[in-house]
Length: 297
Length: 235
Image 1 (cartoon, rainbow over the protein chains, first blue to last red):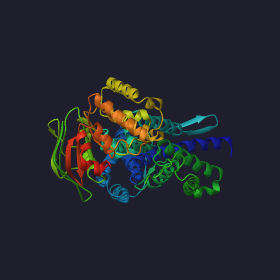
Image 2: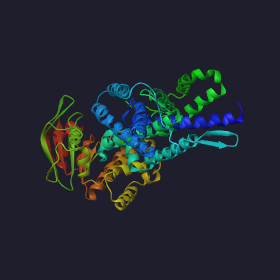
Image 3: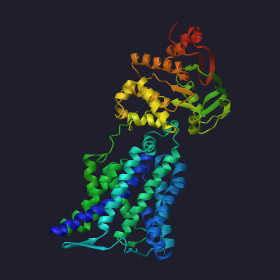
Image 4: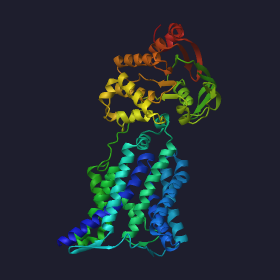
């Protein structure tokens, strides 16, 4: 491998890792707060991508208006899913909410197939966002810079919200103890809604950038990235926001490097995620930054 | 200040409270005494809106608060320190105290109150940045009390504040309760340690399987033969 291709791989790894990290945060935050694996989270990528697609190509909106609208629509959808499918089940056994989440996921995917068509569509790449950069001997897409930068800004913002603001403290308090939080005059529902809003918004940004990077969208496009990001969240220690970020980057970088260093293994690209997951969980069952949970009797 | 009339609560299929009537006057300590399962905690949980009563009325400062949401009841001035302290172990000491003041917007006053609490509990000041889960049981109880005071309650309810603490600490907790009371707080206290509770209480109620069987000024109850036999372990 030449130096150029190596650098190329690093850049790709960072981009993919960024996308995984952004999406994984949604899983980990929701799990942290209501102990639910939100399977519908993956399909929010798809919804955001289609919203942006229709905004640009059908309604002829400027690309940035479409992107913003797509983020808003996806966030509203994420909040609505919580209200309709999860909140009524909050006191039910956890497995019920999990099944509800799987149901929402299937619903979104199949609605997508029925309403939008199963055939993949080419995602538009606005010239202002995606262009070629020539630097020395190598050339790369502007996305290789844009994706990590946007991700970095958002990750810092999420960390500030969770660690420094009152809402963030309330989120962590609610994740520990609903009832006592409500005794501190914390409106638990508001905190849960905020969590879903943040997670869904990040998923929307992740979805749009995913579609810019891999410009072909279809109603099932969220399934595999969603699964990978879930793995990233578990790897990092589900419930931990920095953990999800680390997990995302490890997974993205690892995947790209595997293919780059051993092209003959590229068919095993998707299996790689699972192998890494198994290895990490063998040695650290709670994930890299996972809490060591002691169940009190 | 707080009035409860004929309160009935069903709790997981059990008729936990079978018509309870009691009163907490302003600037008094009132205590509920009784065995496990008598309905003491359920009474406090019903006042806080954590369980909803099937019958009866709860009024606070003349306003009917029966069936109101917990958040609104806390904002209205009633704070409960739940059994087992229930501090947020994953938050720092400072963050725990901030959570107590969650509904308040008066930043300057919050700062002042924080100062007062650190004055009352110097140990907490030393451990400001520590995760609350690393505190000892006694320190956690101090934190739970401090956190509750941060909400500036008018009525402070405590559910077994001395549970699981070493005898020396139990004494300290009771001293603190007395201190808070001397500063003008109204307190509704539940205690397994009936002797100590009745000592500091202005008025007491004895609960037995969801009913009030006896009531009277604290000292009188402490001298009552029946109470002594059943709850104070003295013949």
